[in-house]
Each structure stands twice: as structure tokens, then as C-alpha cells.
Image 1: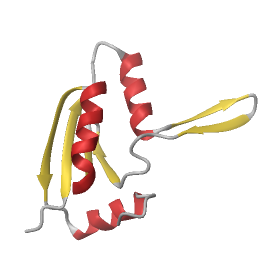
Image 2 (image 1 turned 180 degrees about the vertical axis):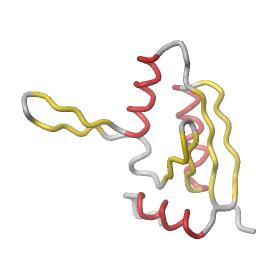
Image 3 (image 1 turned 120 degrees about the vertical axis):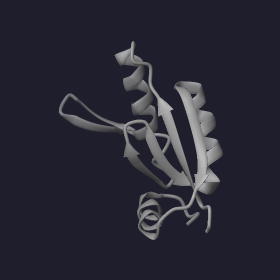
Image 4 (image 1 turned 45 degrees about the vertical axis):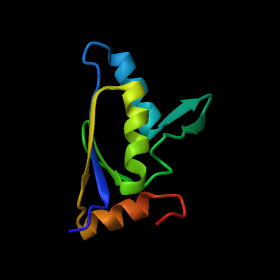
Length: 103
């Protein structure tokens, strides 16, 4: 079985709603509106192929796993990551979300 993905689990600080929002915005990006204009702030995961499985759970490509874990350890607590096999459907979803040329 091919191990070609990383399952990353992280925990946000339950005591700080502001800090939790900041971490999510840094990871996934944010759309804001000012003076009738729309602005898009890009997230760190936008250029990497990823699937947001649930709250605090992300599936990324194997080559991006260690990098994402390092970034998350800086922002969040309780970060763990494991190499896992991905189903064919997940491979297609991750490849479709990837903006880079490393597919």
C-alpha cells in the first residue's frame, strides 16, 4: 500500500477565540470587504494540495506533510502528523486543489 499522504491533526486554543480565528485565516485564507471592494488574503495551504477533513484535521500530500506540521507547530498546540495511504478519490481532490505544478 502506497503511503502518499499525511494526516495532520491540530488543536486550537479554546480560551482564545481571536487567536483561533487568526490561525484558521493564516491556514485557509480570508475574504474581506472594505469600502465596497472585495479583498482575498491567501492562506498558507492554498498553494499546497490539501483536503480539510474536519475541524483541526487536514490531509496533505506526502511531500508537503513535514512543512505543514512545522508551520502548524508555530501557530497551534497539540500538532501531530502521520503518513497515511490515500484513496484514489482523495488523490484527485488534492490534485484539484493544488495550484502548484507538483502533481
